[in-house]
Length: 276
Image (tube, rainbow, N blue to C red; front, top):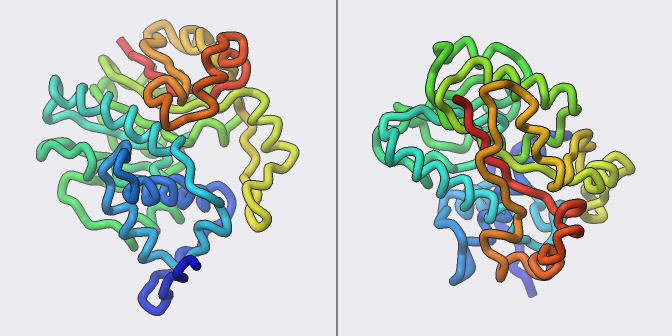
């Protein structure tokens, strides 16, 4: 019998809609900490799940590896970038309750977390205050967050679990604005396929009690060259399906992804863009 969480010392988090989804990857990263073959070391996530008064399993069901794969791949790329830019700035848009700063911190990294007001309030409520971390209450689509960063800056920009909640025009505009504003930078994010977007529009029940928010934008893996058309200085540097980095953790998807035509049309992906 599963032991129920003692809620006497937990903290309430009142979120709904897209902001509530910040609890979904947190749940999966926390579950990863119980595995001997865990993809990331993230004890903070496990602590947060214990502290938050929320029915994680009831909402999101059995934990899966996808969010841990995404976190590990972006962590690894960011760590490589920090080796060449030890005093660099990372900008995480729509960060939610990700604890990436503490997973990759080299002691000199400057971190800017951008999210809507209710999500930033949750970060302030639950996460430690760090001298090199700045929180900005702003939608990624607003220009407010850019006003806090000098134009022409070099940065590593992260958008994990963000772009699917925008329309195609909004995604194009956001990526164009980033490419136009920053220089010599990297941008990393994940992409859902078109079929998954359509499923969410019809009403995607994750569990009996939780329906995922609508995800208006998806792009098939075979169409990722689209990113090269966004801005003259924006280039697709690297792409992978979620099954590529750790196939043993993504079965049966890794077996299906061996068929190119299936991966091209059905697989979610992770993208790294370079900005000249």
